Length: 416
Image 1 (cartoon, one colour):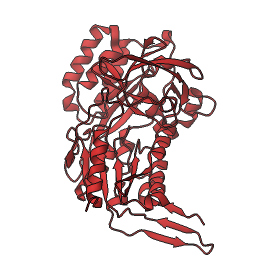
Image 2 (spheres, one colour; image 1 turned 30 degrees about the vertical axis):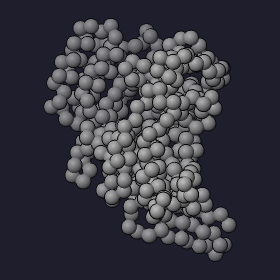
Image 3 (cartoon, rainbow, N blue to C red; image 1 turned 90 degrees about the horizontal axis):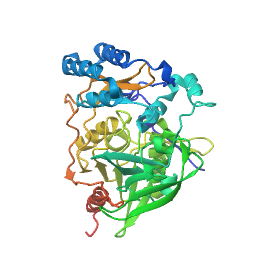
Image 4 (cartoon, helix red, strand yellow; image 1 turned 180 degrees about the horizontal axis):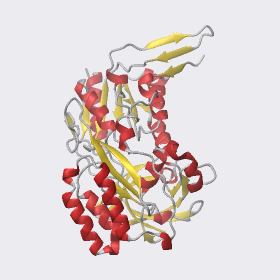
């Protein structure tokens, strides 16, 4: 009889009430007609009040307030200037988002339960957050968009769009993460990209779908789990695209306790996610000292609880690793497990979001956070095996994954 696997450390969500609950308070954005849009002065004054009352260290705000006053004098592009001013603070969990930003929808969906009723008005009839797209996570580098990640079972995945592809145009109009696909859900568009530096333009016919952020996170995490056979050994692999939903922890446990992973000689855990969200005790499944326990019911059902992975493990980290996943990486490193890749983001603050009068979203840090008495904000977690990776025109190649595989082979004793 198929057994059930339960893990308190990953299935329960105390951490979102901690680090990530502070990180991102749920938001609701209501559409505002042009004639109802508040003036730039009112918007900036609203930001000033929120920052004064809630920012984690108000002594750092003098230059910011000076910048707000300067924007008031030239209110031609308030949203752009406000984003620039917030970026200049150089503190994580700080941002200004509008419905033109992919992050707008992702953050709204991550904390959908708080404002379920209002979401039904924004996303009728069921309140499920949706946006039009093809399933790529873009990254803006020097003014150009590149594919940073392709979600599983999306049009981009089916079209074999690769990480590193430069995104140029949609239907011959300049690419943008949201605007380029507005009004095109259910249609096919022509996506123009470049795979090689100074190489030829490539055109793909791609369907536009209405995507739900959490569903794409979960589906991609589940689809990433696989066992790779190499040099006579087996290696489990899973990439945590985001840990912002409780289903992620159960997916992780289900994969690790499955028959395929049971035969693996080692595990490669990829922490290069889109968002953090990992419970503060998420690493316990790999480094916890308490034993796995099997409960057998009178009906013969086997229930695994408190599961622990005891075989060799190698983790992959990079600047994509942020917030709760950084704490997870820190815990693995402290336990002596190898981290392959690049420095993590160094984005470990307690943040909160605020809805502004014009319907935009303000995210600011409201508390500082220390791990083991150390402040990792702006510092992050340093890998034990440094491996650089250049995204642009990489054609899907992943040197950090390859280095992690070599490390896993070494630990598993390949060639000995």
